[in-house]
Image 1 (tube, protein in one colour):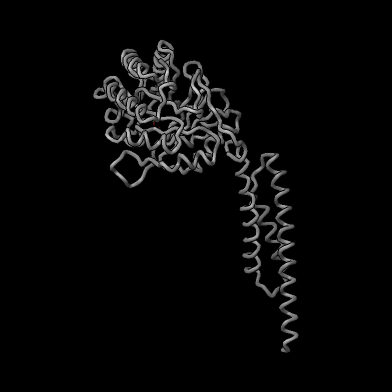
Image 2 (tube, protein in one colour):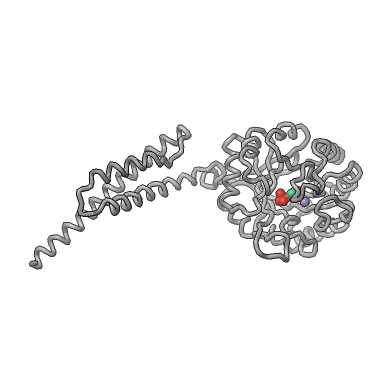
Length: 362
Ligand code: PEP
Ligand code: MN
């Protein structure tokens, strides 16, 4: 072959490459347009039947020299690339920073979660008795904390363990909070209970074990109460964000995300606190993020450094399980602080400057 012919063929190849590029991008634009139309109608973007039809047509038209298998493989790659392009859809999530630049501030009574000052949520693992709630709330309130927690529906590992007082527990929690000028949060586990719970509590908690209970997420999206959404035991950050999107997509944008530790092989702590999740969540989403220092560590002895670490990386608040008499608590007895220990950690957070005196209510 002459040198000229060789050069000519190479030049032709360069031209065909550019033509291919143009045609591929033309196709991508068409796919994008179809994707926009589909999302308007709420139709799934990936359509395997349509993809099979397209592949069959292309293979039937193939005259070689590529084999049908090679042609099918190449086109499959092109289809795949178009789907990846549609992943860009993520930037349009309602809970994404790309959709809303400024931080969402969730207002609960006088409290502003996601505002200038971090908030503290404290209270027992479970609501047990009127007396237990009264003593615990009084102790917490004396430290200037006005956000009370207490579980009434307890998703326990064993069915033989204390399951919570149910609606009676919600009533006790609500009445205690009101008596002390506090707001309250409690976990709801059944979609049909969400609306009922709104009568009693200020914030609905969706617990780790229910982070991907999609019917519960949808029910939480239908009400106009703030939702505290905890990260699942083995959920990725992306899955937590999509769970929050379920709620937001139904019109409830008052969502607080909670990092509460994930399950790893480490046994020194109850769960492994994924501290990097905090700044990542704050970067990816405009929603406030709190850290549960109790369920993540399961240990009182490291709670103060962990609380400091959480606030240092930008958490908007902390959850600290506190009980007037932890040794007789019906759940999570080991990890709950007593009122003395709670006062101590609050004092330490204040003196180290993480919690400002003016952010507390006297
Ligand atoms: C709780 O906060 O009471 C609780 C059960 O936590 P988690 O869902 O994070 O395990
Ligand atoms: Mn607990």
